[in-house]
Every structure is written in C-alpha cells, then in structure tokens.
Length: 189
Image (cartoon, rainbow, N blue to C red; front, side, top):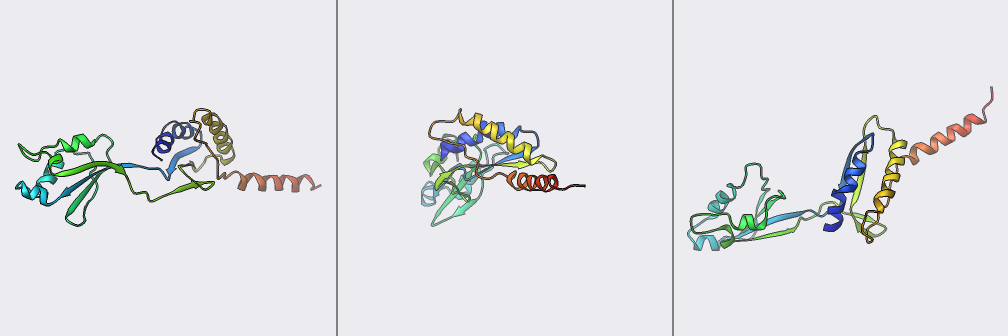
C-alpha cells in the first residue's frame, strides 16, 4: 500500500492535475504513515518527571509542526505527528532535561495511520484517484484527456501496478447527446 500511495501522490497526480478544466485530483484509500510516541507513565515518574515534562520537550519542535491529538489509553499517551519532516530519531533525541531524552522515556515509532477510507478495484486493494472538474470544465474533453494521459502513465508504472478507469462522467453526457442527434437526424421540416 505504501508503494501505491507514493506512486499516486507523485507523477499521476501531477499529470492529471494539469489537464485544462481540472480543479484537483483527490486520492482515496491511500496508506499514510504517522509517528507515534507512546509514553509509559511509570518510566518518566521513576526519573522524577511527569507527562507535562515530555509535552514541554515536544513543544520545542518547530511551531508549525502539527503534533495531532494526545490520547490516553491504559496509563500511556500516544502522540501522532503528521509532519513528514519530523522523524523518529528527531523525537527520540529531544531533550526533556539536561540528562534525559524522550527516547529514554518513551517508545517512538513510525507506523501506518489507521485508514478511514478504503479503495478496491476488481476485488483488490487499491489507491483511487478522483479527477474533479472545474465548474466550467468540459466533461467530455477532460475525460478524453484523462484516458490519453492514463495510457501514457501506465507505461511509466511498475509492472505490478495498473491504472484502471472505473468511473467516467462522459457516459452520462455522450449517450444523451447521441440520442438527441439521432432523433434530430430523423426529423424533417
């Protein structure tokens, strides 16, 4: 999943996002990673520290680093960081005081974030890309361009990955246009 997510966040998103009339490319079912800091409360207490000391050390990270929520679960605290620049080593080496680092009081790990959205294609786990049209974008033109670019992108993907178009808004537009054209071609003045 991580490989598919990395691939989807890269070139395919960039290529499809530059199609005229496309507002954005959304990714569904991706596997994000997160850092977890699990503080076992007896450990800092045995060193004369409390959870507030650990939290104070974490606040020394850059002010724009999103640290997420603190969750209490059976005498431990889990802190989630979604900032890709914050590493396990960076958190482990943060000083709580002159002699103690966070790594000495807590387990820091990079883990897979619990997913809320899952994507499946043909019964297989997948990562979905949703191409969102601008309000004035031409659905037929966008659809044709997505198909052409998807074909080119497929050649760049690893052999174990496939770009599959599972939904296409043009079918809801092209068929009615065809029916009106057929109806009008039989109409005489």
